[in-house]
Amino acid sequence: MPSWGYSLKSLNLDPERTAIASLRDVDMSMKKAVEVCSSIKGLTLEEARRLLRDVIALKKPIPYRR
Image 1: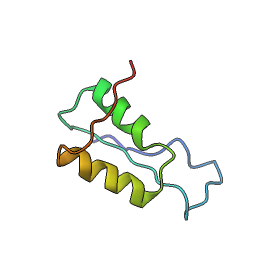
Image 2 (image 1 turned 30 degrees about the vertical axis):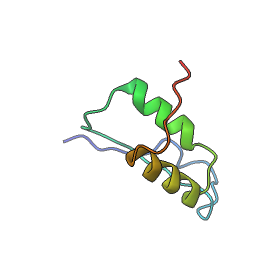
Image 3 (image 1 turned 90 degrees about the vertical axis):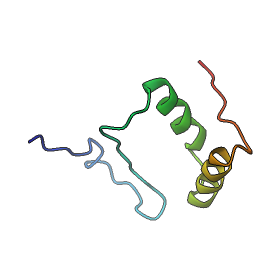
């Protein structure tokens, strides 16, 4: 069984302002994952949640830039 970890452990990130996530065995293309991540990068937690809820409800699109 593989052991998974984050490569950012050595950085001194502020836990109050930083979130780290990882997905495995998810039926999602790399292209879509990159676009979703780039859309929520830099947003606050509440802003990111609101955006993702609006995307699920088909109120807002995720822009594809590639």
